[in-house]
Image (cartoon, rainbow, N blue to C red):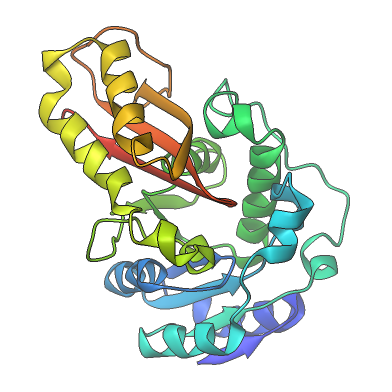
Length: 277
């Protein structure tokens, strides 16, 4: 596995591979876990030459402390990537990614104003900018993103329509108790971690019971189930059309997802589940 730190090195290596290869790309912010490794595995199955990036992007953090505390585990990350068949890893500094002033911001048609966009203002501006820049640098044929970040995946699919990159969503990978794998899980205090399974358990209950009660009552019940231990604070529960992210207030014959954001102490966790398919 080759490790490069500049776009010049990256492009030199990619020029050697691109002519005869389908380039698969997995952008990450490091602190890798089995969920990231599953993305690499999907890439290996669907592309010829696998590129990953490790870049903690400052522009998508609206909280300076969140950026400061974000886990950084480069040595372990590289071991994971090599074990799972990654060919090339790009670990740039901020200047290498943001070397010019070109604007990569686009009108997201409202996809960025709900849920995460409402509670993390500016977050998706940073996501769109850095993903567009990384696509411009790597020029992949296919890129792989996890379904845990459901809203982010929807937005990246939207912008990729004009970037000639096929976006492949990969299923959420979970811990043995159901907690969605996240780099932030390693920051959880033990007393929160032991009970964090309640988030997924509540979503599973919702999937089984959603047609039996109203949309609003379902959201209230999910919040009650998550918060009844007194350890967690629910930031939002939202039920949205899967394609448009438009909130619904009554059940429809459309694909719908239930999305939640929960504070476990100082650590913010997100998860989602497809309700009707």
